[in-house]
Each structure stands twice: as C-alpha cells, then as structure tokens.
Image (cartoon, rainbow, N blue to C red; front, side, top):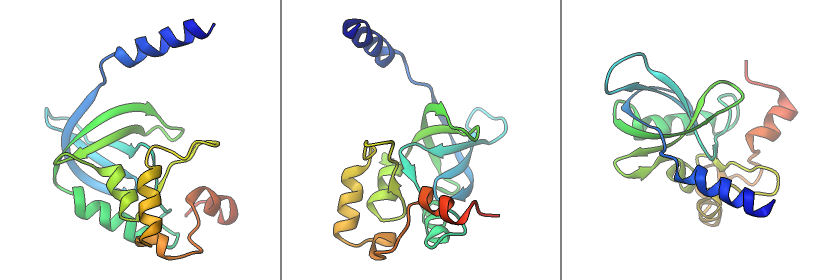
Length: 157
C-alpha cells in the first residue's frame, strides 16, 4: 500500500503544471484577484494558494487588499495553477517579477500562512519572521485569523 501511494505521488509530481500568464485587472481582497490572460479572453478569478488574508470587514482587511493591489495591479504575472477551492476560485502560486506574491504577503504581515489541521502551511517560515518583527497585522496581539473571525462574526456582507 505504501509503495503504491509513493508511486502515485511521484507520478502526480511529474505531471506538468498548468500556468497562466496575464495581467492583473482587479484585486478583490488580500488573497483574491482577477487576471486577464495574455492570449486574450475574460479575466479569471484566482486565489493565492497557501495564504489566508483578513476579510474585507476585518481589521487589516483593507490594508491587505491595498498592499496586494500596490504590488500586482496592472502588472504581468505568472500563475502556477493548483486545485479549485470551495468557492470556485482557482488556487495559484502567483509570481510577479520573480516574487512569490503569497510569500511576500505573509512575510510583510498582510496575511497568515494557510493552516490545515496541524500543518502550519507553506509560508510558516515567513509568518514566523513577520511575527518576530511585528510586521503588519502581527503588530496587533489580538489579530484574529480569518477562519476564527468568520466563526465569531459571520461572513462580511
């Protein structure tokens, strides 16, 4: 059984990743944006994979959105595509001028590394750095991860 799982994992890792190159046309919030493909067509709604930014109505939500927009709005990006989330958004690792946008958002204190169960997420090191330097939302000891915020306050309206 373990050998089969290992082989399946190696086969999946060897599959080519789909990538989208385009221009950011809009930033919805600190982890969601729209990219118009360079080859044309309608902009696609994408979500940064591995990042959990504050909700729009939550403290630091506007700042997170503003910082993401300042970094990528109107710029060419490369989105390495992952799975689709529960809201129909394609999860992506976004690169802008060779900057991993998700890592930058977390390192600068505009988002948390997305946690799943006991896994600290792909940007755990960047989050530790941001916390240690009290950057952005990590300067507030009461900063609440979005998942907890939604559970306590409900979704933004």
